[in-house]
Image (cartoon, rainbow, N blue to C red):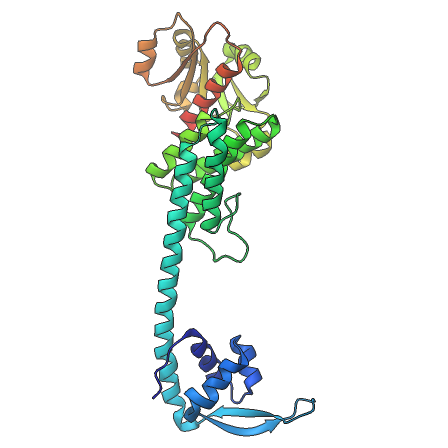
Length: 349
């Protein structure tokens, strides 16, 4: 018996056993191989398995196309041969798939390392690192948006999530140094959703460096719905004019959502409810929050306190809240970015 090997041979023989009779052209089309490959299988390598049955005129000048069929007594033997080729082909495909996945995994790791090192304040090196990340995304089979390139095999879920995470954080870093506020806002809205979704899909040693890179470049976007004691609303509304009040069932409290996340809210949370509490002043804020039900509805760690020099920082630290102490210029962009960053941190961590 000939020694069967190769995917093209498997394709031709599989097509042959599925047809009562066939021409060379029939098998070439069905198996998606060349006529030369089919001719080699029929007339040389596996000649004894086939017989000529008749000829077929195709409406064109010249000799009619010869039709072939499998020798009836050789059909069981051919079926066994096809099965053996199939096992070899499966092993060949598995090895090729494993190699492709190893290349993709290595490329994604290189892309993640590049993004983790990037600093939006170091414009000179930022461009080089982001370009390296995008190049490695491409090598792994993904576009700059983290989606698979056209024509590529569908990636596994973990690699797909990694690619989306790398792309989202890269966009935050790039957008942070542009003069386009909308581009920055859109990048942060998208990145927050990807960061939240990827927590359960990506290992902590991969997720944390990328999340930190994104948060270090964060702007003034309040990425989640928040709650605060009613007396604190004027202060935070003055600090973040894009906050809008929304209806909620908390007593003596205000629920608010950043206008920039409002159109995307269903992508971030399943319903409009506060995810974190913000307070103005630690001591007075904790007293106010105790009477407005926010304390009972939100976990203790999910608080951001905007404090002042009169606050007991040690007490705040022991309570485990995220504390930001205002400087004299309490409405600076840096101060607002730091508060927004801490709000994102308590939601993600």
